[in-house]
Length: 85
Image (tube, rainbow, N blue to C red; front, top):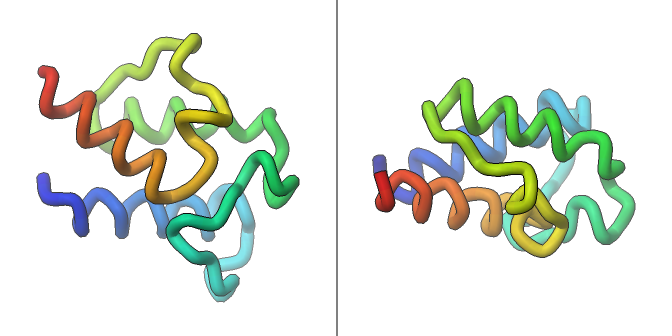
């Protein structure tokens, strides 16, 4: 899977499921959790999405704001995990 394909999936999920606003002008590097745009409870949803959509398990200790605070960071984590499989 290439970066653009993964990024588009993460972006669509973030807008539809987390922000509940597909029209929001989200930047790919915009902080999600640290800015308060979404709350930390959404981190579990991100983990489930990654496991379901990409067949990739991210261990709970790696589901952190530092690792998952933007569409870009989430995409990077997914691609790194897929490359390690």
